[in-house]
Image (cartoon, rainbow, N blue to C red; front, top):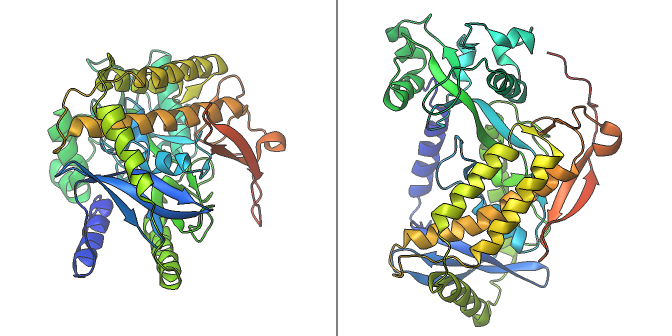
Length: 440
């Protein structure tokens, strides 16, 4: 039994299965920096071995991107520190389009102050969301579904309560109370053991005795590397699965627990199709010049730079900008301001300096590379959000609050250019279930 530990159990099962085979090598403490594409197909990739600080080139018959999401471009997020959009940005730079990047899901119950996820299990067990007046405010926004309404509805309701002064005030900003005090401690530990532990350890709250402080946090990217239902991308030999991919499965707003489909179903599909392709293909040639060019870019251009800008400063400004201007409620004026800031940060990035000039386990260099990827991903999110002049799912425009199926029932595709993302669109394929008005 794993009441609220499903994800951890899945990871353990996968790891145990993978380590059961002697012929599966693991590359721990490596960082991929570039996908090498030539003639319409993928030829290889470059990666830094952090243990030695050496750049290596890999060639392969097939490549599967399963690098997760982009949550760290926001200041308050449920994501781990490694969720910096590396895979999406690497694919984007190699010519693969990113699809539907404007659709970023904000989970209504991020633990204050860290942003750690308090999962749907809490509200499924009867958890109530309360404002500072003690009101169960979801009755104003979704009177039938209440706290169990879709995440975008609940997150917007919470944000509106806080914006209008009905949130609690704390040292880490406003928050909403998640009340589960109807359970005694023994019942809580039995039904929601992980949530109990998180509340005690990270918020200093015994959730059986007092409410848990929460507020919306960046949680999931519905967008990603454009792929079909076989996880194939537009570049031969490249597959994408999990959160870094976008096959249209989640539309504009993922439902709770449906990321399991991304991981288990499409992960398996990607492995199967990549293996079939690999068995038919020979190893491609990998020109030495590709490795040399990437070594020059990373080690001379970034590690060897003596500029005035510092990665932590730029990263904090990026994350705060996304949090303040590209969050739950969006508006053209704020989005334009955010785009101007991000493009300014991209210019300033050219003048960064990494204080640690060593090669071995240089985490400062890793952070610099991650920031570069984050800036590309953030720019795509903003440009896509600016262009979509409607509200749909997790993308809510205050200046365009209605859904517009006549003009915007289509997927956004963002292609890399030196000047920034070039947008294109493709229609949503509807077979049986047509969009209807959402009523909760």
